[in-house]
Image (cartoon, rainbow, N blue to C red):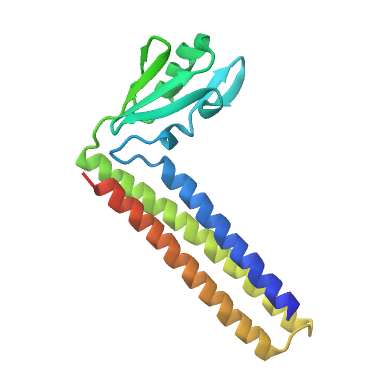
Length: 187
């Protein structure tokens, strides 16, 4: 039974990783409100090294439609401004003394629909990852039966349990995407 439980543990871990990756991707998808996570993908060419913005500046959300970025090294303000502008996030950073104001424009209906499509696409990719984990688990369980390490009945029960785990994982992907979709379409 130990081998079967190992397969289930691996499957749970893989599904969990798919969910974490989906949450990270969905955090990058912009809603109408400002969020510090919107700038997670921004890399600044800092002394020749692509550096994540959050590692060289403090990012705050003073208002629902405004981000402020305050680089710890004041000489990097121009570099940070350029990186945010070139990150293709649809943001227009404005330097203001030793910080950068980044107004978050309201989303148009068309842009909201594009973002919903993007969220659904990311959800689909997560489901593919979950299905790949299921395929791997079912192959391992099949191998256990072939090698005589578990009876056919045990393997059949284990496969049913694996399918239940996958169904739960897929439901969770749907609920994550659904919540993000509601967030995007909220005006």
